[in-house]
Amino acid sequence: QKGGYDHFMLKEIYEQPRALADTVHPRISDGLPSFEAQDDIPEGFWRQFDTISIVACGTAMHAGMIGKNLIERLARIPVECDIASEFRYRDPILGKHSLVLLISQSGETADTLAALRLARERGATTLAVVNVTGSSIAREADYVIRTFAGPEIAVASTKAYSVQLSVMYLIAIRLALANRAVDDARARELTSGLLGAIETTKDVLGLNVEIKEYIKRYESLRDLFFLGRGLDYALSMEGSLKLKEISYIHCEAYAAGELKHGTISLVTEGVPVVAVATQETLLPKMVSNIKEVHSRGADVLLVCKQGLEVDPEIYSKRLDLPALDDLFMPVVGVIVLQLLAYHTAVLRGCDVDKPRNLAKSVTVE
Ligand code: F6R
Image (cartoon, rainbow, N blue to C red; front, side):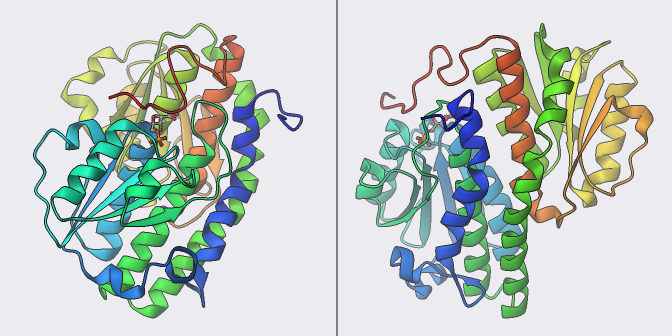
């Protein structure tokens, strides 16, 4: 059942190249994203909205954070991204030109479902990105985009996140094109960038052994910090959630520029920091934040992009990701963070596939 892997989680991490291809390929038509054939969403759909709310919980919300960044950047439409349990109770401003995008692996998460119902009541158009066919969220949403991760057994979500992310790219490019924020040529270039990123996920899995070796120092750890900026910050949120939920290490993900506004007081000799620095445009700023923690004794693991120059004095270990355009780095970056969480949990003897206190589908509020 585990296909030769020790845990479902590892199996599911390795299934990502396939899950991504299965989700994205049926939605490419003539070199551009299209949801017409697969999801019955007409091209005109994407031109109707002046605001977008992305609503989800946990890992799915982290995919939404990246979606917000991509849509705003490419399509220039304002996007808010909310935790479903917060969205519901803050009297959100919605109308007939609002799109509410719900993301859920199970399609049964109680707060996400309630947010969907609220959005419909308020006259917004609802679009759900779900992995489970026939689930409540899939049934009740106006439009549905199915992800094809296949069944996810491990409680900690891995492949479902990746496919949600890939749909965020497709939506962002489609919206950008429909709203004329990019021309046809640029949209094609972005689409092929996404396909290229998916191809390279196989190479990133090759870092498995190196990661397993490195994390031996995390065996008796209590606290760890993730740092990142922009897309790397959103990715750090996911890396931190993954590590804490299965290894029981207390972690925090910090926007690197925010650290000096309080939290840096916790960084002392030997405190491990995972610095996610895949964004070339933000690299000088990230490097100065890494210097700040390094000078206080932090033990820095640098997750970087191949070819970027960083002074080796300021980190203990560097993991290099394929040199893709900044925009696509989360597609490959998340795999490193998943493997980091997985091996740390195994090393610490945790029940990787069934962490304590957690359920695969959260149907209570
Ligand atoms: C973490 C994890 C959870 C879920 C969250 C939402 O690894 O799996 O944070 O992402 O409970 O679940 P879905 O996507 O089913 O709505």
